[in-house]
Image (cartoon, rainbow over all chains, first blue to last red; front, side, top):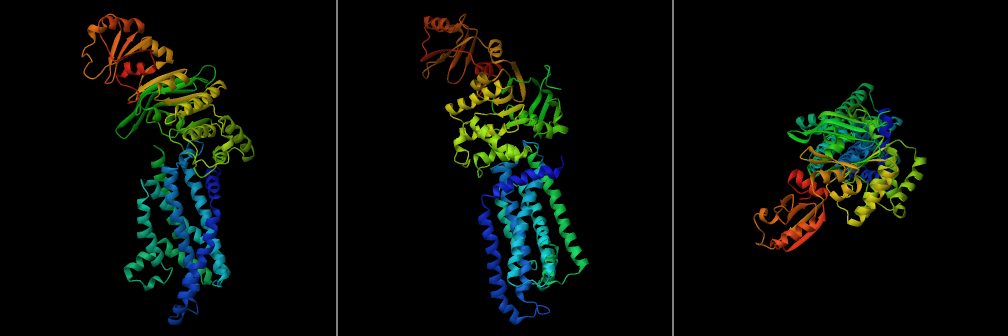
Length: 258
Length: 313
């Protein structure tokens, strides 16, 4: 039995559980991009476009929309990999139910992450559709922003799941959100180019997976993408996923195999 | 095939489980035969749950050997778990799903086809008398119903062996009897039952054979009747005294009447084969306790004799 066939089973559990709440999340994933694009892209955009010239006639809406899409993938990953992981270990203990059956720790991790990946894919797809409806896509290459958003999401959900499996309580999640996720959301190139930051902060922003995701999503939707830089961004995101996966395997095993 | 022709289905030799410096299970040996109900009786912290978790292949063996269905839990964990039905001490039901969905999704973990699982779930819910709640969420169910659902769920893969860790802890007496009744039926159908308990009545009701565990070791092994015959007398006289009226020494009062005296904080137990004669005898010698109760020996008395402590503290 391959690992993927086994991982399909926990995936099915999370899907079954999701069926109970999907309507609410579907509404959220349509409304959120509309609200953000109206407020920032259209509302704030009027002022930005009047006072600065971004580059070759790009509107602020076109600039900010792909960034928001990548940042949304990050935020969704944060929520889906923190509380639900700790709950499956500690409160509702669904992982323990799975591990009493032929499933192994690796299958449980993979199945759960596959579900989170699916959620990110869906949300990113809806985001791109809304951006297109706002007329903020310049190139058909923009459709590739969806898999890039998935990579951004996984580069966060894997290390966050690793942390959650290591945690005793949810207290640290709020801290992670406030001191890591929120600053990244604001300062990783989503709303303005990181070259506007002071040099040390620019270096830090450059190191975040989000900046690579935002930049690549933007290059793709604007149709202004170079192969080598795109490969470098994808490589960086994949490396972050690989490190996250290794960490998650370790903390899951430590927590669940005692 | 291992497990048949009288070979033990589960076998442990020198089985050890350590957590850091703490030794939870300290080199125990036991064999479980196909079709029997085998119990681990002992107080909390005796090492029962650790033993069960090693048999269930969710907790690695620290030392010694363990074989389940003749297989090695380290290399064959997946294949062993496919043939087990696990009722853990702490429920692992999904509160958001319905009763029926909980059974179906659990069957999916075993790779059973969804088509078959619908009928299977209905059949199992009927067995545990939860048919009427099939489409309700799990959250509002009573403790007894949740336990029954966990039992139904654990049967979805038609297990050869059920691992029941404290199956009725926290249930009221009526709910316990319903659970016991279902376990009886499973035993009659040939399912091997392994259970841990700190209730002596549960052990007496359900187990063909049991081991008494204390502080990680096995202190006695046998059928409930054998254990009582070996480590206790046929009857027990329980004496209770008003404050300050309890003698310090029972030697004079019980000399020649009983075979052993066990002095507990709240009562005194006199072990004898004829309880009425003993209580009559101490009365004649002028001892006047507040109350006298003559009863049969139980596994509680066995445990007390072996360890000097009560099972439930």
